[in-house]
Amino acid sequence: MAFIRRRSRGSTHYYELVESIRENGRVRQNSLKYFPSKKEAVEYAKKNGIEFKFEADEWIEPSLAKELEEKLALLNSRRPLSPSVLQRLREKFEVDMTYHSNAIEGNRLSLRETWLVLRRGITIRGKSLVEHLEATNHKEALVLLEKMVDARKEITEMDVLNLHAAILDKIDPQNAGFYRHEQVFIEGSNVVLPKWREVPVLMKKVFSELNNKNRGVKAVYSAVKVHYDTVRVHPFIDGNGRLSRLLMNFRLMRAGFPPTILRKQERRAYYSALDKADENDFRPFATLIAKDVRQALDSYLDAIQ
Image (cartoon, rainbow, N blue to C red; front, side, top):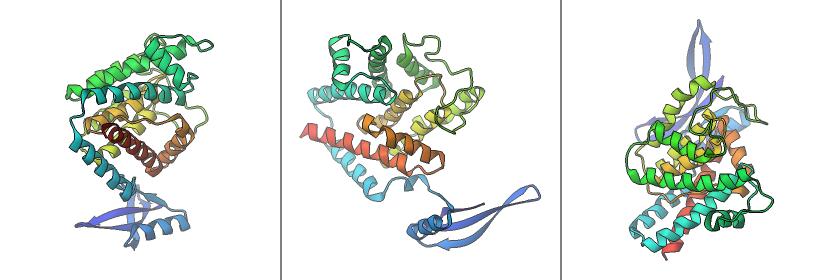
């Protein structure tokens, strides 16, 4: 099997075509060709149907990564924000995030109906009790998420279990906050999820990434990993998508980024990007998240102006 990978020599990078050969029960790698630039390597890979292994810092285009760094620096220069501005932003995010995250999973409440449920306690005719509970539960999960961010302590397994418990509270109390104890499948996907006995060990990787101290655009890469790994470990019977988006935000907010929303309109691109990530190409997924982070930064900068 042949693939292309990036190599470093001092402060410079180049790309290498590598062939893996199994001999006498061992794998040996031979370097077949070198490329001085990423562009040449990508073109060769596409032309010859060869896998290209992108490193994390290649997931987001340099121009977008630079833009995120600049906008975050500008936001940081305006901090601390006034309590009234923060409150308005928090209230808007609470409703918008709840609506979009639930809608991605099939909840039929509109944005306006979500606002009525959360702000006025109104029951929406024609919508199920579960759909109402998904909205109120998600709001409570966001409140808990903010407390976790503000606590400034390392996130633990119990923190994540409590966050999941808030998502499924009164909907599925037997599974709320408890890892799955059966094999599950993703409908319409060929992805094979880990066996349930592997979940506690696999989640340690997520906890480690949540406590990663990198900031700036490296925190966005970290948030991408948190989101993807949580989805693909699929630690719970239900609520994994909502949880992964909340944990992604935990990682971003701990690094100083504003809370970020993956929108209902992006649902098709979102799932397509996850499929690409399954093939070890994280660029579409990371780019999708990075653009939403940029939108969140713009919203905060607009609000304080």
